[in-house]
Image 1 (spheres, rainbow, N blue to C red):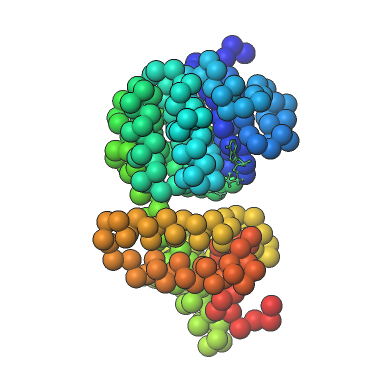
Image 2: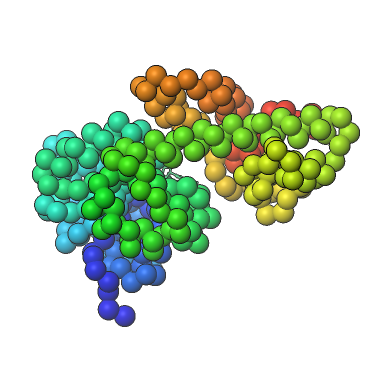
Length: 301
Ligand code: NAD
């Protein structure tokens, strides 16, 4: 099969990045990959990617660079500073950063790259490892409309719902607002279900009632936190897989920073952040975030 334009460099092949890069290969793009972990690159090479020995090598000949890294400091050091890619990327390159990071770092990287005529969009994702594997991620983009249009076909190879939230940083803000709400919904649903159980109700019946009443929400529809109410969700699999408590804590930290800068009142988010922090400190950081149900549960653990 002849390869599709443009050539893509993909940096960061972790839980999310690896399946995303796989989907770009499946869509026919030529992908050059780099990660600090050798085995992650070997797997992508076996699927048709070319493997680079550094980020600088990966971007040679690339028109588009995608990064999927843990946090803002990784993104900043990859692109900016004396040893950053800023000095190596050709003018006109489009950088798509899909990591979940603070909007301020995202905006700062965008404006520094712009000085060298390198385009940047923030494109964090929702949908987890399952969505990354299935190619059904939601992308929430911040950046100018022209670069959004340029990125669209590439994002469509990895996702299903693509939104243009606004200018640089808006993708990160939108993603963090959503995850703050999700944490609050998960806590509220857990609290309500446990109170029903404490009063002798069956959590499955209670869930069905709330699903048809005004308490209906995403966690009840797709991600019930009470074990054995729903099949194929982390709560029915000892809270394994899914979206880790530590990652939710990280996102709530970003949400609190965002709220502080915009002088927004976020009492629910602040409470959620503290409860998730306590839950993580109690040794549950690697469990799925729906395990917060155990904070309320009186069941034997
Ligand atoms: P991960 O820790 O599994 O992967 C990060 C990868 O980046 C690792 O393979 C690491 O070796 C690599 N890396 C770090 N620094 C690097 C560098 N300088 N050069 C090259 N590679 C480098 O993390 P993940 O779960 O894939 O998450 C990535 C991002 O996506 C995070 O910002 C996370 O918050 C966000 N996110 C994760 C999920 C999820 O469910 N896991 C969902 C939505 C968003």
